[in-house]
Image 1 (tube, helix red, strand yellow):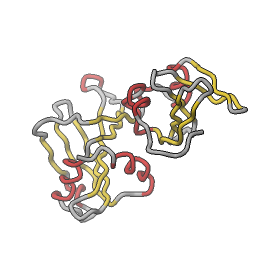
Image 2 (tube, rainbow, N blue to C red):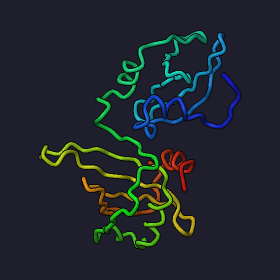
Image 3 (cartoon, helix red, strand yellow):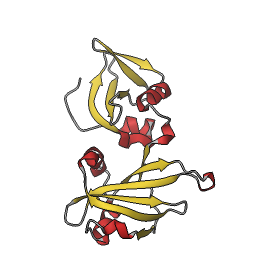
Length: 192
C-alpha cells in the first residue's frame, strides 16, 4: 500500500464515468511489477474496485496478492444491480441558459431561491438518479442532486426534476444531511 496522498479519480472516470458518485477513493497499491492500482469502495455494497490507469480491473486475492479479472463482470458484481438502474454522475454538462423553476415545497425549509441557485450554478458535478417511468413514451424520469455551499458557506442539498428539454424544477432544498456527506466531499473537487 502506498502512503496516503491525493485521491486519484482518473481510472474510475475512464472506467465508469456515470458511477463516480457511487464510490469512495480509499488508497493506492503498487504491485510487484510496478503497476499502480487505485482502490475505490462502493458506498452501498461496501465492495472494492481496484483499477489501473490502463482500464484493467483487479480483485484482492489475499496474502497481499491481486488477480486481474474481467472489468464488466467485476463492476456488475460490485453494484449488485444493472448499471442503468442507480445513480450516475454528470460533469460539466449544463445547458448555456438552463430554465429553472421552483415548486412551493422547495422553500419550506426557509432557504431562498438565491441561495439554491448559487449551489446549482457553482456545482460542477451533478448526481443523477434515473427512475423508471411507467409511461415508456416519456422515458426515464430524472432527479438531479446538487450538493454545495451557498453564498454564506452553508452546505446545502438541492434536488431538482429534469425533463427531456433540460428544464429543471427544484423540488427540495435543505441543509446538507449526513447521508450525503461523502458525495458532498467528492463534489467539492468539481466546484466552479
